[in-house]
Image (cartoon, rainbow, N blue to C red; front, top):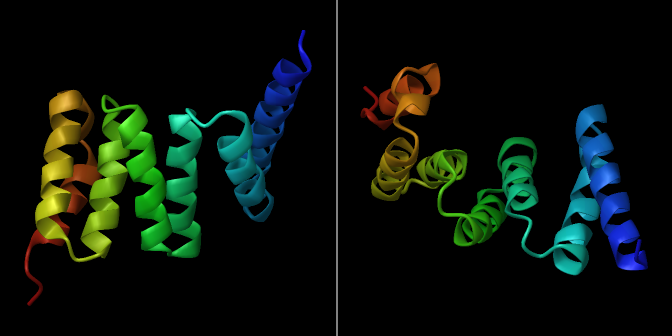
Length: 129
């Protein structure tokens, strides 16, 4: 096996271990280095980074940046559009959020129609009293 393949497998192993062990603070720099230098087409890791920034850091700009990169590489993943819809909603971009939730539904109709996530999303779009 080539040195580059070994390096790729090592990064993948470490990233999986960090995710499994919930060592979030160690996951971020390793995941960024992995994407930038080892596998720049790993849309799933970009999705994970976006989720990390959105959920853990409350950094919607970085979250949007990473999820946009993931969607650019893989336009057929409903989860990516769903996450971006939540990011857009947090940014106050309701129309963009609704467009993405519709994209997620069109990709995988059954995934969101019967879930509490979709209901919560619809509720969050209603004007507060």
